[in-house]
Image (cartoon, rainbow, N blue to C red; front, side):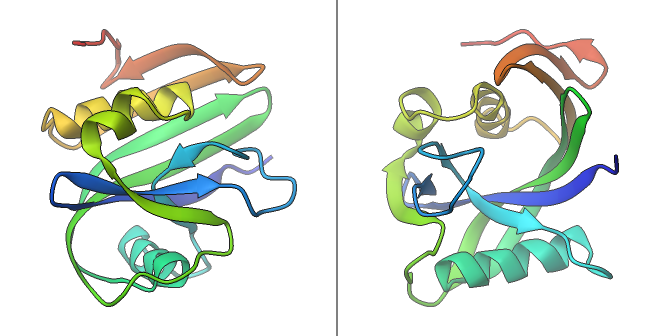
Length: 160
């Protein structure tokens, strides 16, 4: 099976992240969870091209200032995904409806520690908030539960 290639962006404004509460997409493995916005790379796209397109499609916003924070690999059984993680601090446009769920500006601390999300998401949000330089994070799941996290080749230890 081929690995999926995706992007995910956390857009920041006034101490808040724009979060997507995934409630509208049928058969969504992330149903009812909170996360940033993004999606799958299309043929010929770079990760940068993809994140700009996906943010525009899902939010109506056009990114003007963004950076790659890391590459996150996910595995569970025979499923593999490589995700390019972005942070954005600049955008233009007005927020629009999203066909995948509800978009809300959420206090960063609440987004990291209180919202229901994938366990690994909390790790990479923590790393992003701590200003960790561009990182490689490997997350292995079994039965949708995080089993291991490896940061830059070493077991991850939370600083929380």
